[in-house]
Length: 103
Image (tube, rainbow, N blue to C red; front, side, top):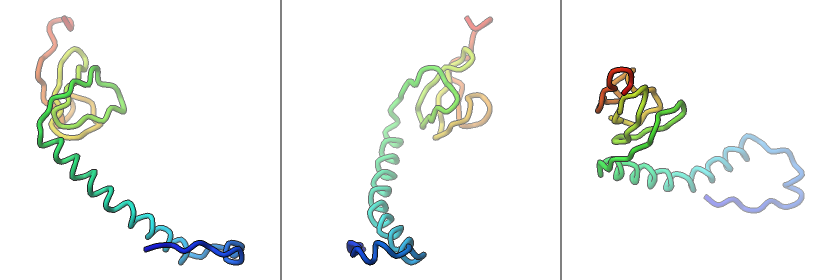
């Protein structure tokens, strides 16, 4: 779908729901193929099983499968994309348990 430029008279009229729907569809038409490509690349990356050390876990970190982090003295490997804290669900697998007193 291609949107035609507005004439000056059209530009002065208030937008209608139809205009907004047309604009949203035009944007979606452009974004759909890009999103499909991103999803395909993400699946390809996850299938590669490359290991990535992300350092110390912190709130807000987006970890993907095979990302590793340290948290509270232990080392964790991510099993699927998550923002959850290691050790509280099955998103993470404990790889190295912290030693006595975190040493």
